[in-house]
Amino acid sequence: MRGVSGAPGGSQLPTYRYSFDWDAFYERYPLPDVFAKTVFLWSPERIRALQNERFLEVMQVGWKNPFYQALWRRAGVEPGDIRSLDDIARLPTYNSDDLKTDQHEHPPFGLLPGYASLQSHLQHAPVKLQTSGGTTGKPRNTLHGTAEWEWNSLGAARAMYLQGVRPGDIMQIPATCSLANLGWAIYKGCHDYLGVMPITTGSGLVTASRRQIEIAFDAGVNCWMSFPEYLLRLAQASREEFGRDIRELGTKMITSFLGPDTEGTLRAQIESLWGCPVYDNYGTNEVGEGAFECAQRDGLHFMEDAMYFEILDTETGQPVAPGQVGNLVVTVFHRTLMPTIRFNLRDLGRLVSSQQCACGSYFRRMDHFLGRSDNMVRLRGVNVYPMACLPAVRSDPRTTGEWLCEAHTVVEDGRSRDELIVYVETRANAGSLDGLQAHLENRLKADLGVSVEVRLTGQGQLDTVANLGEGKARRLVEKRPAYLKV
Image (cartoon, rainbow, N blue to C red; front, side):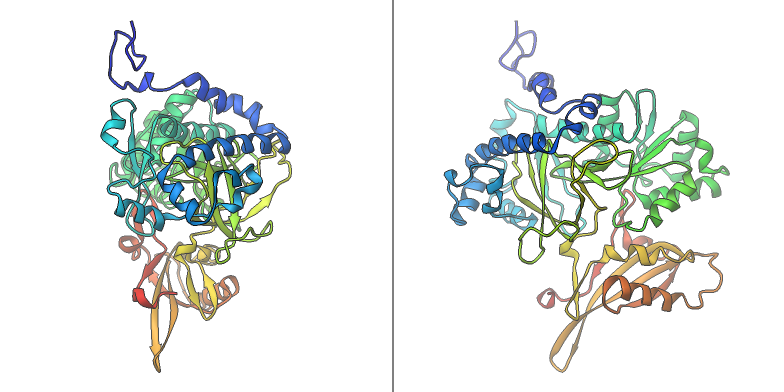
């Protein structure tokens, strides 16, 4: 006997295991090894046809959702206006400010979830609350039903599989299973989908760095997921606090989030210290694993069967030419709870290839994540993005590679202008710093297109102000009055 939920014994509880058609889900979004041999290798025409089909499906969900009904009708869009993916530009975009307004006006979760009462929804379907990281303000609430929650881990598992993770591996995860998605996605991706043993040590605040290293050596860890800053810290802790070179672990791969490492200096530094390849990824709270490097490491493949990415000009909202930088705008196919249709992530990216990769895939490839457009500072008519400082800061071995931008406003003769100070950490054993400030200011001027002031600080002096936790770094501190920001 089975209950309404499909659970055995006549249970009426909304049991997770029986709340979902798992076979249909995996048919729609294949498991990692099947994905690698099928959808990932499809032709561009077949991929486009699949995206068109799934876009029209999610549009049906959108037209039943009060958030989109209001958004689209304000823009003069009616249901018959959108006939295919070719019409997507007729839909307005929205961003995190719109989500915050929605949740403020219709607390606590806004109209976007698509139901009137969370309590009544919970009576027949499991829901999990996650939030954004809060890098640019108060974290945003995002609800996940079964499909949305499973995609987080399935998408991560696909990426790790294509990066070489295999059953029998042991992965250490210095990211806490908290309101942020990342720790959960990697843990479940390993445990539920890959036959990989996850070791969920959490961040350095949860498990001290020396203990992280001790656990890794004891357990035979051969794969890692962490942010670059903490990977560098672990290599240092292994040498200075544990007395062993981190390369003795024999790590086979690291999956990480390299940010705007366009010259490969950060990747090269980590690979030199750890003695293994490092793979880049891109993802957000709303989409999960959005893009990932394959074994070729020649751009990050968009997860084309699960979402559709556009790259739009930060000011006009129009598509940019291939190779040009713009805002990443995403439509997610697997989301029905809090559906995501033309969401402007305000993350900067650029398309590097629509051609077949050496791995065999036609999935389009983007460059590394290049920063956030809402972290922009306008200096003398030039848009400056703090994350773009990475190549310059890491161009001299006397720096630790850490930096922090401070935006402030100068008012003279009743007129205001924004200025930027870039604080750069120097190594304790750097020796003479002669010429370093001038070198960095010249390099930053060349990279950013405008002059900024560089101030050198000692090693560790940016820790408290620049550390967001989990190995994630803050790159901009605002000292500008809100009413003067451009």
